[in-house]
Image (cartoon, rainbow, N blue to C red):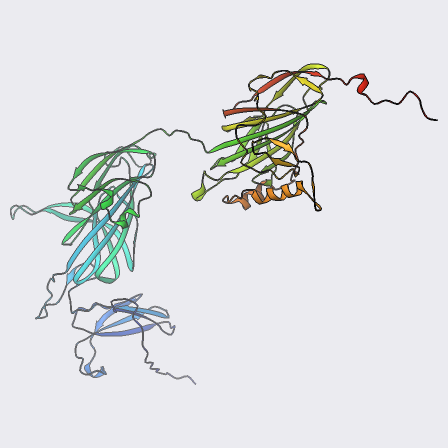
Length: 584
């Protein structure tokens, strides 16, 4: 049958607070639980049982106590909802305490409630970051509570400050309310003290604070809110007046701190009103405040007391466009054949931060054979409206943003050239890039069986057989080529070295010397850009008479050059022919 059982369990529970005024324990789950907790104390210990439906002070007869010598006990009986966990906290009444609603209380020698001398001092670090239309504030408070316990901290805040969050250890809750604060004492008994309604931020601590404690208030204010420039629903303005006033903590003996101003966008900050603060150098600021800055600190101040005031005129100027991608070197090699075709290889050494594509305007009747970005084969796109070829780029980030370089390779063939025969004029067009090029190197190989006059057009031919600079890249796509120390290419004659060809050694050495790049997100971007049909890697043909050209600082230009040619015919006597007498 059924029966009722009384089970008594004696156990030890650890304190969960440094002050040793709080513990938590697991209990059997039931529909209704009752907790009877007592602490050895004179009245005023303020026992708190979390999640209790109700709790009341109760009187317990002395004989129920196992420790008969402890006569001063205070008991609380609490009724709990269905739960398997209980947390209990209390205060020691040996020193002055503050009640959980923020009123300082204690107990005098005769048992009457009396105001205790709880000493609270506060220091404040304020970082004001001027951004796009708003000023972000982080106010770090450090308080020291002596001779008592403080449960609630009250801070008077300006009407324009919007508090986003309050961060601190064991914060139970925080709220903003209106309060009437005395601004001046009454002059006569008939005249009441002047009272002003202020916004007060109240922060409650879970266990009560004694000793040192710190918390942070994070908020923001709209630029121009003080002078009425900004109204609700309007777009934020980056220009206006910023007014800052001290945030005063109520019921503290003294308050001091530092203020630092920084700009996180391109604005001009001019100092206006300065009251009850002293200007200091940034070297005098605490490290904790300097660590909050994300840019250079513009103004620094030190204050003693909370009645300080600052104002600044913030003016946003028009942004200036800057380069987000640049081509440091562009190397173009073209080989022309007399049948009216031209093969071109374009190598671009680039740096990029945010640009998505590089656009090229190629000559008419051009077919792309191969494209590579950062050593990976990619598939280009075509913009029909602008008649440009689009190649997706890598983007660098982090500390290397804008510093890391990578190579873009493009091989294409042009079939719009007229066939070369007899005498005529050869017109050559270069691709047009939408990015600035610091140094453009052009190399043409024209058919050998022709004589050429001087080049005319947008480029001037180099009279020396090498460029003014050497390519900062070792090419390993063609094994039979090597880099000349003077900067021009030559053909390497294969030499037998014990079963190995010199060209194989050159190719292997090129792979070892090829620079490695660490671009952010390369693997992800490569997989995206190489989706679909992948192109093949095409080697460049370099045969014929070599002509060199250079150009500095090229920006969105398409060059054209032309040269007159004359075909060189073989003499009648140089042709191969059979002898006069044929053998039968």
